[in-house]
Amino acid sequence: MNKVTELENALTKLFRKGTEVGYSETEIDEFLDGIDYDTLLQAVWNNAETVYSYRADGEHELSMDYRGTELFKQRATLLYEDVGDGFAGVVIAARSMELWLLEDMGFAVVANFCVDAGSGEYITEYRVYKGDDWTDSDLDLNLEELVAELAAMCESYYDHSQPIYEL
Image (cartoon, rainbow, N blue to C red):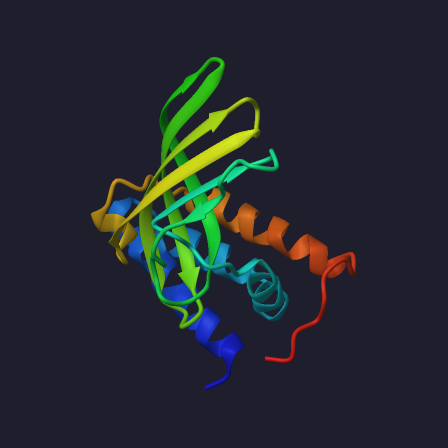
């Protein structure tokens, strides 16, 4: 099975779980029909990153950037973020739920707590793996918004601002 087919199968399975939370089969079919899987795979590969359980990044020379342990032991691409509670002031603190696509075409639901001090001068994030089933988590996944996020991810491929990957 090639990677495009693996991606299509993974997303189909993910979207079909939507019937458990109120989406109709017709809605899900329409969502899935709107995805360009070949281009999306290129975009996913381009956006893949190592995800850490804890990380800290600063803009200053001696800011002590830090990486904790790898959360997944493989690269992953952030597909969707559901921002929940937060506080905005001099320091921004927010808790969100995230949906990540792993290199092996599995999914991971992750809780993220982020603190941003000085408008990006120093950012720290703590992530916890919550499982692979979004319907059995605190993630409020809007499938229509997810399709829009996936389409937006493809834009850099369409406008030729990313490399082409041999997969």
